[in-house]
Length: 117
Image (tube, rainbow, N blue to C red):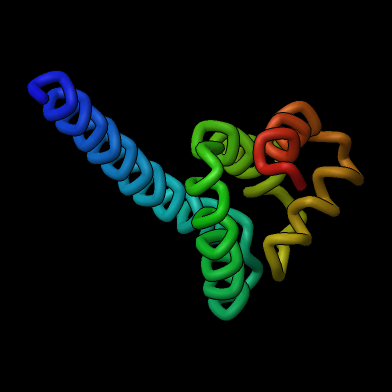
């Protein structure tokens, strides 16, 4: 009986840790989404759209345990693509721009493999 109780208690702690990690990951990605949107967006309405699309994608990325890979992609976008002449209107425009400039390929591949998309 004691072993069952201990096992149940440990399982609950693991679930709490997992939930806390997901919450932290979502917060990290939400912040990263805002940074990327501001750095890359053309106008305020585009910044809002990029942020909203990014946060929607982030929910799935966090659920699949891919937070670190998503952060790497958004970091790459921000450092390699944004702040230059090209500004974007939507999150998917960053993918197109990355393809055109052959940037962030390894990061996007790793994220795609993690999320299964």
